[in-house]
Image 1 (cartoon, chains in turn purple, blue):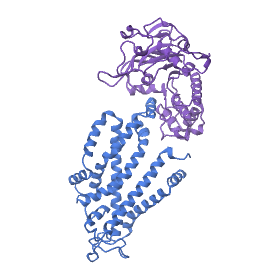
Image 2 (cartoon, helix red, strand yellow; image 1 turned 180 degrees about the vertical axis):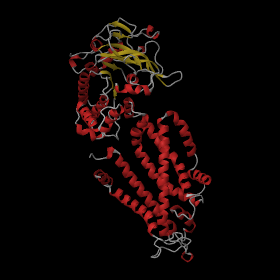
Image 3 (spheres, one colour; image 1 turned 120 degrees about the vertical axis):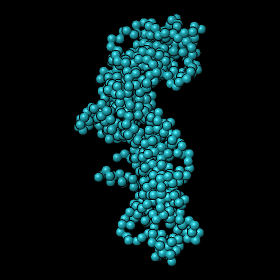
Length: 331
Length: 280
């Protein structure tokens, strides 16, 4: 991908294997991508496809088995946690489960204060007080809430506190690790809008991990489709949703519910079976065991990720699968 | 100060916790202050008064040497409570430190826990006997021996809880912020360990008083001239069929103290858990 002028993050040959021995679990198996400054990149895939593992490696909550992670040109894949510390104020994470991501024994003031203290921000009692109030206001919570404990809040409010904690250190890059999947649908919309606002306001670069295709379409500029630790397709959102070229992307889109019955299609090529074990992935193309278009050749070699149109990459041997618009779009 | 009163109010909002706290206060105060203002010698022997039943002169009766049991219980409380508190304190500190390190740092887990397992493979009382035999029978050596005996229990419980808490997302969040490891241990893991540790603390307090009695009974406890509730029961056991009061009254003292402490411990544990607090 040479079309990106300013990649904030460049990932090359990133791998994460869990366990040792002859069959380690290949959670992430050689992925390459980059995230441009100010861009929101979506990362979608089934459970177990390695989405969260990638997100966690980018901010070094997990150590990669192999590969490069370039943050502003500097490879951070192998640096020590100590060297990593100053960079931590530049990249933050919002977690999936707002019930587990806040320490139940700390008041909101302490939770946000810890973020500030760690990076020596807002020193002095008054500055600190003001900054905490500002952060709460930013995520739509009342400053008086600072003295409460996490259990006194609803899931949506807790997720807002998680967002405030991430923003406290003024990061440029945020990994949003399925920030909506633990929330009620009505609350999801609020949090999506909040993320949208903040993204605009602070020019945040974001890796948005989700399995909710509608939210990804709404929020993201480009989307990566992941399957069994490998990238199947990368494309700008518009292209991916209307002209998906990989059979897996097509199947994912087909499986996503469509609210308007008039736009539903009778025949949807739904996938059967489960995602194979990442400890023993299929030879060749990892998707071939569930692919309706698989050929004998698919078992022979791993299809490389190739650019089929500017910015549109897919890892599939077959070029004859045309872009059937599978899913109805009201847009 | 207001906050202190508020905390106390909440702690004692349950009648039984208040009762237990008062009981504990009374026992401790009596044990500390009575000997200060009294010239009675708890070891005064009166052969003519041997094994007298409780009466106006001797509220709790007398033991096999004619010593007043009520006096000895009050004096003995000093040592029993001290042994209980000191043992619980030291074993909780050592056990929490070891359990925290073993649970948090994976490389330390096996080395620490194998030593702990080895210690646990001895029956408590045997380990206690051998330790006191090696160290020599004195009050502090009994405390030290008992603390060593109970440290593995605390370490096991703390390690198990640490393993769970370590994986919670708020620890990841702290790591992502760059919070230092000592601070993660101190500010994120330790406070969330308080409930199981407090439970262990109150248990060990009660166990230590009983174990000291056991050691004394076997002749490796505190020296016999120091009256503890345990030594009193141990030395009078052979007269129990003729003079039940010799073991009943010290027994009641042990039970009441241990029970009160556990109830107060439960109360404090609930108080420390923000989820069980009514919002301020």
